[in-house]
Each structure stands twice: as C-alpha cells, then as structure tokens.
Image (cartoon, rainbow, N blue to C red; front, top):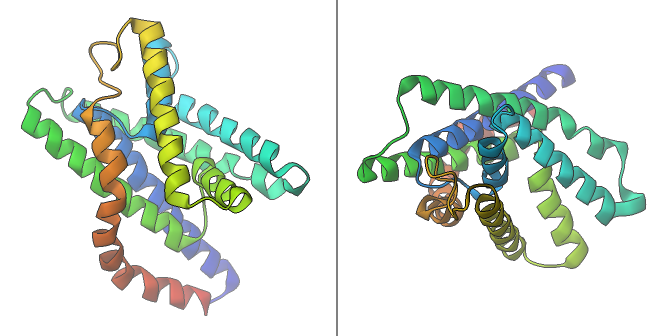
Length: 228
C-alpha cells in the first residue's frame, strides 16, 4: 500500500472515531441525565448563549487546551501542535450534526430507564470512538493530547491526571450553571451535570476493556495492511 493510501486509511479511521465520539456527545445530551465532563462546559455555555452552538463552543474550548499546551511546553511547542485546530473544527461540526440528528428523532428523554439506557449508549459510543482515534493514529483532540503532555512533564499517572481534569471541569460547569441559571445542574430543562456525568466519567474506561479487544480484531489487520 502506498504512503498516500496508508495515510488515508489511518485518518479515515481516526475521523470515524471523531464521528462516533460526537454521536456519544449528542446521545448524552439527549439522555438529559448529565454529560461527559469534557463536554460539560461547552454545553452550559451554549445554554446561556443560545445563539452559539455546542459544537462551536466545543472547538473554542479546545483552543484553550492548545494554549495550555503552549504554556506547558514553552520552547518545545511546535507548529505541529497548532495543527490540532483542524480536528477540533471537524469535531465541532460533528457534534452539532449529532445533536441535530438526535433532536430530529425525539425530544429529551424523561423516563428514567430510557435516560439510563441512552447514557450507557453514550458510554459505549465514546469508548468505541476513542479506540478508533488511538488505533488510527491520525487525529488527536487537544484535550487528550494535553493530558498526555501533563503526564510526561509531571510524571503523574495518566488516570490520576484524567480524574483531576474531569473533576475540575465539572466544578467549573457547576459554578457557571449556578451563575447563569441559579441551578447546579443546568438551566432547569437540559441537565448538564447529574448522575449521568459520573456514569460516563467512571464507566467509559471500564467499557473500553470490553470494546477494545472486539475492535482490535477488525482494526489491527486493517492498520497493519495500511502500514505495508
């Protein structure tokens, strides 16, 4: 396989991963039971500034992670880090598309069993999407890359840094919701922080222990052929 075809396969798999994660974001919003920590801040901002979409706030929010990378890396920050702008733009549009798709299907869930099922569906989609991104070795979102950079610079465990970042994002979201709406969970109609947030934060990694081996049976031969 030519180098061009190899790149197309890798970035195709990574782009599919971004799409699946975006569907997970849309499904978590539809569950109305709380959203994954990384999407909490863009969602609560969109609820306050309704003329700006969740996807737009998503890529703006991820730009801040690139700025944080520059602050951490300083002279080691390279132009290749700036290229992370492209996948977050793509991802932002995908998130808006996913929200539009699920909004067209039905209104936010109100039955608690349905909410839990949608939330668990979001967990599975996120786990699958992350694996596609990693195996494709094409796009990497700034938030994920920032975690990697922090672990390299500090020597801390990735899982510890991830938990600390998730907690910080949820706390900031709660403070924004309290400021904007006088509520801790959202605007009273859309629930941004609830038990679904905790479910997605805790279960996504556990779900990957199940989905990763299943995906590897299909992905590894494809990627191996692409590298030849």
